[in-house]
Amino acid sequence: MSGAFALREFRFWLTNYRRTWRGTIYTSVLNPVLYLGAMGLGLGTLVDARHPGGLGGVSYLMFLAPGLLAAAAMQTAVGESTYPVLGSVKWLKTYQAAAATPLRPADIFHGHLLFTVMRLAMNCSIFVVVMAAFGAVDSPWVIAALPVAMLTGLAFAAPIEAYAITRNKDQSFSMLFRFGLIPLFLFSGTFFPVTQLPGWIRPLAYITPLWHGVALCRSLSLGTATIGPALGHVAYLVALAAIGVAVGHRTYRRRLYV
Amino acid sequence: MAARDVLIHARGLAKSFGSAVAVGGIDFDLQRGEAFGFLGPNGAGKSSTMRMIGCVSPPSGGELSILGLNPLTDGPAIRARLGVVPQEDTLDVELTVRENLIIYGRYFGLPRDVIAERADRLLEFVQLSDRARDEVEPLSGGMKRRLTIARSLINDPEILLLDEPTTGLDPQARHAVWDRLYRLKQQGVTLVLTTHYMDEAEQLCDRLVVMDRGAIAAEGSPRELIARYSTPEVLELRFDPGEHEQAAEKLADLPVERMEVLADRILLYIQDGDAALRAVRELGLEPLTSLVRRSTLEDVFLRLTGRRLED
Image 1 (cartoon, each protein chain N blue to C red):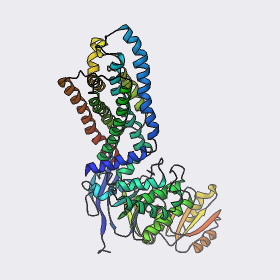
Image 2 (image 1 turned 30 degrees about the vertical axis):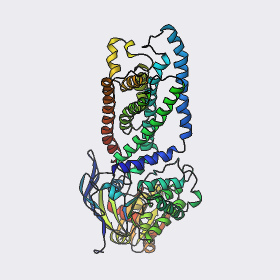
Image 3 (image 1 turned 90 degrees about the vertical axis):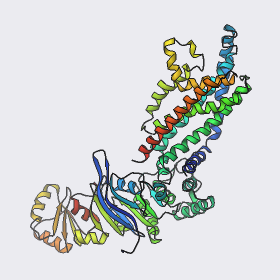
Image 4 (image 1 turned 180 degrees about the horizontal axis):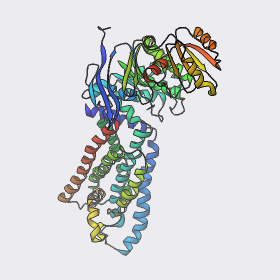
């Protein structure tokens, strides 16, 4: 029964998305094209000239692309789990409208997460296709990087949605972007190996979810993944997502059942 | 009366937020087919009561049963049989008028053809058929309210909950909403509404409770309440502000049942307003304006609480 209720909320988001999906597709294609073009090819030429074979024997483009895939999943997740949640509970009050029907707060939360997962599937698939088009893929295992990137997104989406539902103003999000996501984006091994960071700061990078996503996506795309570390990364991301879901059950209930 | 179904049963129903008491233990029963009202000023606990009935606010104490079910454990089953018109519109303003109904019907798990048929019929009912394909955003406040009412009926509810259904609407839009609600009542839909408009309560409610500061001050039909707590007629007098107090002192000698001295008016509660006005003039008082009117629920509220409804 609970699953069916969540699907009703998912369909609500789908109906809304029908009006805007075209614009989002442009963004989903343009984003990897621009990043892989500018950083992968442009900056990559300089990097490869200075360090032939320096990044484990692969070109900078090959190194960068899977990291960007995970980072793009994070961005998609954050986009779907901040303003849309606050808007639904505070501005449009469509969450409250749903709460007056048989749906429970957990169903509303799950439905929104499902929609986020769908958006992740779309964006990450497009990203992988663009990667392949750029010749930035080294192994057929890149197919496995797709669900890993989605899981990385979910590990962000679940806790952030659980947090966003408690907010009344969107200023909280600018703090989250400035002090959370931008540093993660820059220092989680997306653009350069974490081993380049000073030793004392490295453990910090290892506990960030994005690093786990980046590391696993990269090893799959390059065909260097081994089972032990891979399971470790997945377990970490699953744990984060699970904590987010558990907390979200409480925060959604507290907000919608006053 | 006793043989009819009790749809909502509340005893000692209470709601607090931290140390603030919103509803302080109230008793009421709702019968099938009646239009039942909570009349009271803002902050009386009406909306909190409505939210508890709507199963989106767990009671802090007391008993509450809705359609024979427990709102704490059977929320989804109860809400499937309720229609809710919240105080603030919760329409999806980015969708069209009709899409709002379709989406809502899906929340109740209704089959597609049932939703489509009901959506058309309900848009007809609230006189929005010609706006079916328009976005909600540019609609007037009254149209949005009517759409919210249509949406609340998509699941063919057994009880329709209306929280301040016409607050913020201009008089014409209010009458349009009242007209629709009156028709629903004629069709036998059970209505529960909150309002701080005494004319709304008088027009729509078969029975109502007067709420003040989280408690029920009185219960009955509008006519019963007026008969019990007020006089048939009221004489309203306005004096020059400088003479207001002196006039009130002199009027105290008149043999009236009750006198209320408000900031801007003096109200005399009497059997015969014209006779009372003659008596006032015989005292040598000449009010700036005088008005003889019938008692309303506003007078009942003033009598019960010492305050006015719409302050």
